[in-house]
Length: 236
Image (cartoon, rainbow, N blue to C red; front, side):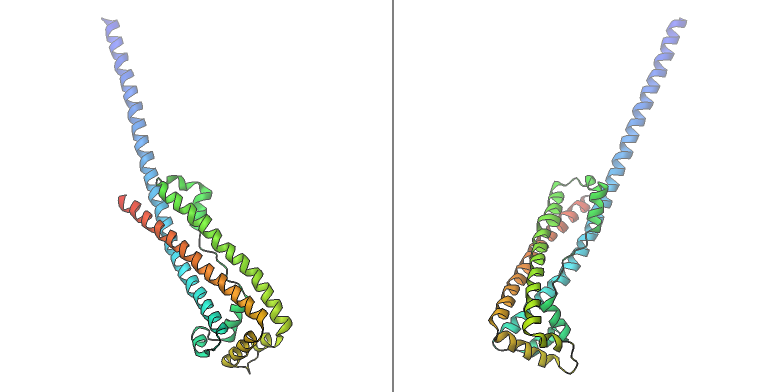
């Protein structure tokens, strides 16, 4: 009788321990799942905030890059319209910047880089989002930055050409006695009468257009990412 009670008591105690451990594991699993879900939402929100930042940055780049094309188009046109350029470039320095400086492309990617470095991208369950992120921040970005790098070399050639053959136009940009209109007329005349300079500017403008086209592809991918992130967040 005593032995039977002992076995029963031992069985109940063992069952209690097993149930306790099972409940503990179950509660721990629920806690982990809840934490993972919270982290997933946090990561998705961070990515979405960065998409908005990227969109603003790209809009500004697109505006400036299209203005660069407009200025070059006017300077390369047989009939110079100074008023059209003056609406875009309010000073000589703006036109000069267009000629001798290159436009960098450094989109805000701190949140994405941080998620990669910490390994928090593992919380993103959507393979589609991961694929778009890879495309956006690797192939699309590299295409734009490669055009920027090539533009650097083109600018170096143009600067050499201007300083050696037309130092007066460089000096005119800082001469307060020369108005923007006079500066544009002078610059246009130089371009019209020098085939090498005109060819250099034509090549650069082709790269300006390529750069804008590449940015359009980047924006299409960015819009894909926004759509997928919104879809995931709405399901949460």
